Image (cartoon, rainbow, N blue to C red; front, side, top):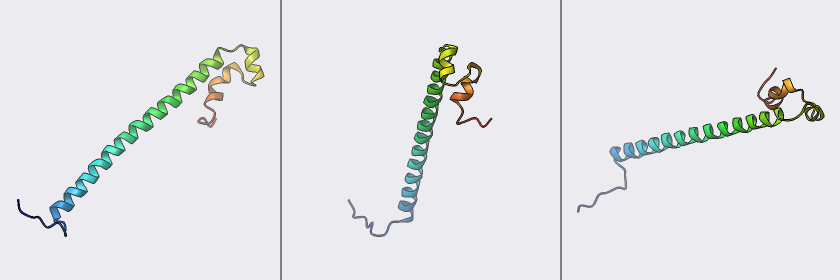
Length: 83
């Protein structure tokens, strides 16, 4: 087995290192995108659960919360809706 001098990397090694870094950056970005999609999905599920819970309340219970029945969705999504 011959000794390979790696004190100064060859152009091939530099290219391989750059390609490897780029590959792992793309893989990391893909996992990041999936993670963000899961978080957004769960946040929307929680909001819909809140809408269902409020819809299950009586009008008197909603009045105590200062929410009208026809404003439940706007109330739950008020931070996203600029109406």
